[in-house]
Length: 392
Ligand SMILES: Nc1ncnc2c1ncn2[C@@H]1O[C@H](COP(=O)(O)OP(=O)(O)OP(=O)(O)O)[C@@H](O)[C@H]1O
Ligand SMILES: [Mg+2]
Image 1 (tube, rainbow, N blue to C red):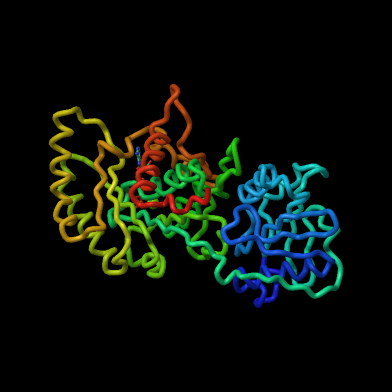
Image 2 (tube, protein in one colour):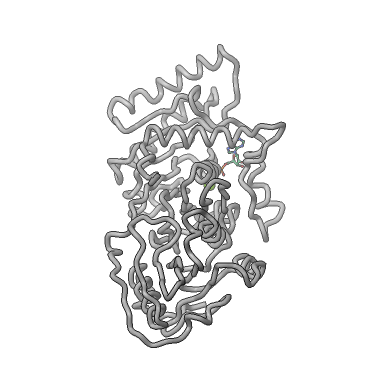
């Protein structure tokens, strides 16, 4: 469906936000922009005793249920409670699951959802009160500087099938559990990540605002479509030239999954060497982390031997590249697990509706993937300094 808006309103977030502000202020509301990096909302609308948090979603595709849930959760938080209402206004429309969610809310809900057309806000639920009026207001938006700095992760190795998609999805899950909103960008034409993560994930947080994982195809990806995400994770194609150069240049961190199999260990060392060379032709600054995936405990003696060969294989790269880090598998690795092995089985079992939950369910009170990916997220947070993204 084409967007109901003229191109000048949808060319970027700032224009669209200005347009939304104009429509609201025409109906007699005073509009203020939220402070830079304000989580939860973009504009505040005031009229008489009413205070409204307005979330402006500039999207090339439909709103998903997790995006709406995240806003609902914000309105329920201590900070959100000061607002009488929350308006969720988007460019294009609302997807099926988002519409079902809206239908499940009753009249008492604080959320009103709408689509901004050229001259009016089209109501999805309860927008009658701001759909008319003729004042010509604008915001004092300072959005040129308002786009927060995002950290970009690429999950890349030039070898296929070693766990890029698995790592991308579950690292996003672990970071969302730690309080970050994450955008996943699927750069692989196979689109496994999009198929499996579907419309995204909302991770509720009983002590605060929940977080979301949103998934974008490379063709619709734009930073402004994920303004509330602090972290962007790209599931790269194993052929580096198939990944958009602009995104590879933009990577702050690259996670390179490998395996620790006895016979493959030297070959994998060469693959990593080639992977690093390829990345470095385009991006000289990203920190590169090799992580062992699909790890099976070989026993103490064999592990010592494997680790020694593994470290030697990467020593040479470390000598010439001070942003190359090999994660000691004793510190952090992703263990082999049935949960991860079967995570993708929906693609075969149910190709029409392959969306699958992340492999974070507990079995016998524990879950290797959850523990391992939280450890990996922790490691990255410590070593790569993503703590700078935390606002509180
Ligand atoms: N830790 C693990 N434990 C068990 N199975 C795993 C693990 N990691 C990945 N797998 C399995 O390995 C296979 C390949 O993983 P995945 O698709 O994530 O790799 P990939 O690098 O993205 O592949 P491609 O190059 O085809 O995109 C999958 O079938 C997955 O189930
Ligand atoms: Mg993949």
